[in-house]
Image 1: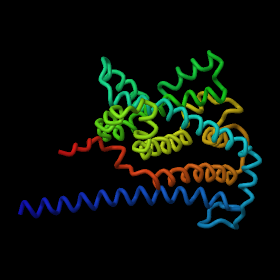
Image 2: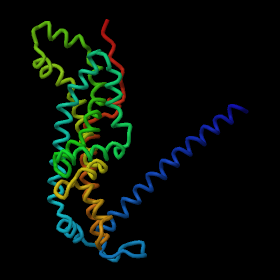
Image 3: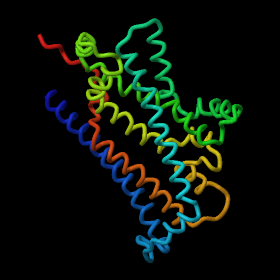
Image 4: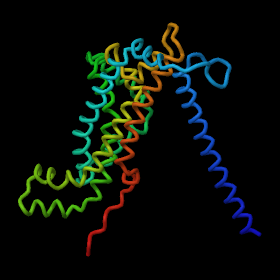
Amino acid sequence: MTTTLQRTAGRLWIVSVWAAVILFIVNLLAMIAAVVTSSFATRWLGTWFPAGWTTRWYLSAWTEFQLDDLLIVTVEVVFAVVAISGILGVPAAYALARREFPGKKFVTLLLLLPLLVPPITYGIPLATVLYQTGLGGTLWGVILANLVPTVPFVVLVMMPFIEQIDPRIEAAARVFGAGTLRMFVHILLPLLLPGILAALLLVLVRTIAMFELTFLTAGPTSQTLVVALYYAVFASGVRAVQSVDAMAVIYMASTLIWLVIALRFVNPTQMVTRAKQQPAK
């Protein structure tokens, strides 16, 4: 009797979990479909389907919101953040994974803080410092602000990849006369390439979607697409809903493209495992 009740409870739990997941996915797809439909609608008020279809709202959004300039700024910010995060994060991850030194746990905790704490909590004092130094409202101010969470992110993603490499491979390379640079280029880099690709692609997606830090530090000429979308929705003035929805679709598409690329080349399970390979006996 008890076993039957346990099985029934287990099945009900599984059904409830799947129902919650399906409900979430359906609601999400319905919201996306509503925005996409509105962006192509000539007029859509109080009916199941729009009165007609058009693409003129995309042209209107492109000229009204100057999307060409916004896309250029977004690309500049994103790729600068990706490059600098990789240059700083990969060596830092190697040092934390391979070296023992006093205060290592404290340094690791400091790296975790920007990922655990909501960005708005440290974004306001960070923006204040940037404006006091003259970097607030500039492109470099936006880049520096986005580096605060992305460099630790690269470190934490790369550490499992580095820990899975047998240290004896590096020792053997040094025995045969390889210097640090040659060992990194010819031995570590090929082994770490999947991890580096994973980290940088996810940093790219994260930076495109980062709103708080960019909003607090961006100026009129350094806004990314997500900040401009916020101003389009909440700034004063009258704007066509379809035009704003078209802008939202462009932003969503630009993010999803890079996310699909990331998932195509990245295995998410590689970023959560920390199990080292057992040395051959």
